[in-house]
Image 1 (spheres, rainbow, N blue to C red):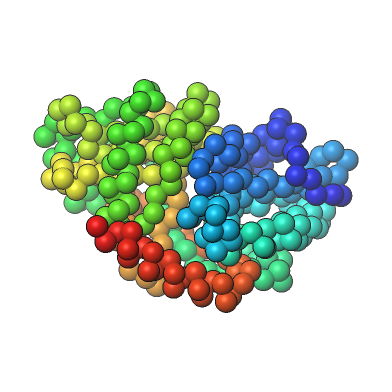
Image 2: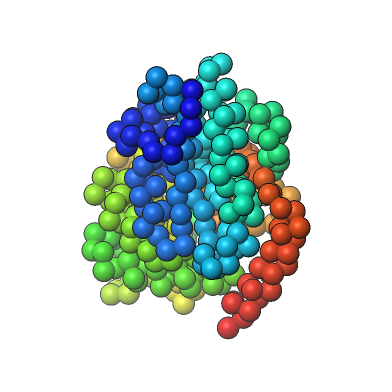
Length: 336
């Protein structure tokens, strides 16, 4: 049993696809997307025995202010991982994997965050023994196997009304197949994230995702259009039977046309028509904190789950300094 940093791509792809918790964020395709993204750096590790994968994780280091600031502006995210064979050997492989990962990463980032996408209580003791602290974090999952009429009824009355008004006013949904339109999508995303006072990834993330994932039917981009103007959009990741709401945006200048509402409903409707099982909102904040986005998402009829997250801070002193510094940076960045 040993840890490797080079993973045979075909074995990696097969392991994730066949695993009951396999998801798009742990695939070699997503690693390649991160590799092509400015200020993103993928980290992939696996534990193998007799050339077979027992445990695997795909993380991404995000250098928030560029690599020149080193670990002071860097964090590592493990979304939907680690994944492992759930037997005695697999649990031992998981311990070895996480120990190796921590040794590799601890001097390069302030913290690691594991973003759970299922109930991970069976490994909570293992992660706790390694210094990972569990934090509650909500999400909404929409069951797309329900009849379309029921999905529509499950929307809140206000969302049904908003979507109807958008359609009555001539808002159309268009699937984006032209790479040149990503620049328009990105301008809308930047506007949305600036209003929320949250940094947005570089445009190269969306260009890489379009280039790598779209040809494999692992990504769809839908945009809301009124007359000849794009007013909102949604980036949907696709893997096996699940659709993931990755990024969504709507221009405040056209808020009376309800672009965010109609672009969020469209993939739910589209997914149900095309045989998908789940629409995953990919997070709805901490339960003890007010979060406007959660109020928006909950009105689309999903079931609320609390799979939580694990966080490990490698240097509490640095973390305190960074939190203070980032708050000042954010105030300056989003002041104008």
